[in-house]
Amino acid sequence: MTIWQLPSMLLVFISSVSPHPHHSFEYDELSQYVDSHQEEYVQTLRDWVAVESDSSDVLRRPDCHRMMDMTAEKLQAMGGKVELVDIGVQELPDGKTVALPKVVTAQFGSDPSKHTVCVYGHVDVQPAKLEDGWATEPYNLTDINGNLYGRGASDNKAPVLAWIHTVEVYQALSIDLPVNVKFVIEGMEETGSNGLDAMIVAQRDTFFSDVDYIIISDCGWLSRRPALTYGTRGNCYFFAEVEGPKQDLHSGVYGGTVIEPMTDLIGILDTLISPSGKILIPGIREAVASLSDEEWKMYQDIEFDIESFKSKIGVSQLMYSNKVDLLAHRWRYPTVTIHGIEGGFSGPGSKTVIPAKVIAKFSIRQVPNMDPAVVKKQVTDYLNSVFAKRKSPNKLKVTMIIGAKPWLADTKHPLYEAGKAAVKRVFNVEPDLIREGGTIPIAKTFEDVTGKSIIMMPIGGFDDGLHSQNEKMSRYNYIEGTKLFIAYLHEVAHLKKD
Image (cartoon, rainbow, N blue to C red; front, side):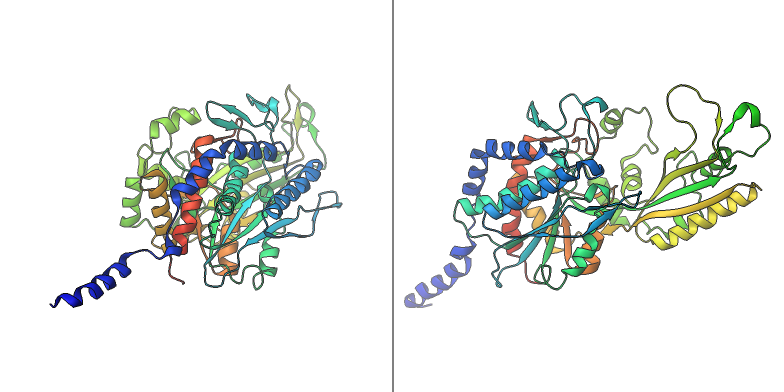
């Protein structure tokens, strides 16, 4: 090789490894900004938690509207292209209607050469009262030992704010967002996302047309190890109603002469599931996708402590004694749960009544490859056949009121590779790949309607107490979670276009 060739070859070599200026990632600078503004982020969360946006209580509907307005104002103040989308009204049991909280959509950046991600979240919350057993006022965010206690803190106000702060941090440091970011934030998730499916369908070819990926952060880690979520169970919710005499009867006067609806109902409920947890409805177990060796191996590697799980829920024994069985039955097998019975007498004290009509409420968490329409038929046919054998004069009516499908992603999708890289950068560990036992129906809707790939990227802790008393978000997860989102946008920017 002659000497004069060397510089040009070195030059080629150097230019192929040196990062392009617009690819350099100022992670440290962005991360330091987050650290130095954490008090401000906690205060914003405090302001948001103070709004009692309980979507299940119609009397709180003005708070839900106010919460949507606050969300829109925050995004507007950042220069986003924001819309409050009217999704119509909700019909109440008495026939009256109330306006549904508007859905907030926002857009930051519209560079066609960049990927576009859409972040979904919700700002409505579950009910909460101090007398339910809260140690602090549920709507007054309280910092105790680095935990921020308040209703909705983890589900889902802090994660939504962490995403908003992510965009804000890039803006504050005048660093270009690596991707275009869109938001879809709703106010009815806790009661079934009324009106949202229709809105997604309506905006498929407009708002969602340029979206490449959808990110949902409405879930939590399984342990202290950060996690990426790739599946959720669906939910088929049933009412089984048994009706007998035309009115409630006195058990002294009529007991022993009528066939009681409550006895019938308890009798058929007992045929749904065995004491060991085996679902007895024909066809359900047969429909479940079988557990592959690869999946079994994934479950083996997950960080999960059975003893602390037991003590956290306060039981001495679980349905299964090993980790893989336990996690698999929590995530990838269906379950039957009986939630309660309406009718009869359930108040304190004693009342000798034979109820004329009773309604049981139970649900089946669905998994691949179960289909809600098929489950509805299986459950209805089975309960009717069991009831017929009782030869009771009472009437049975079975209805399915929710039929939400499960969602499952491919963990080998580049979105998950990007997620692993972001977790590694921020937390310096490999994330656990987990599924969620609960249901996030909107994930399936997004997938079916838009055809886009979805990742669930939780920042909530395993012990946040979602839907429970003393719900909290740890300051650590809130702040480091914001950094995770910052790093994730950078990783997604480098994915090849689908």
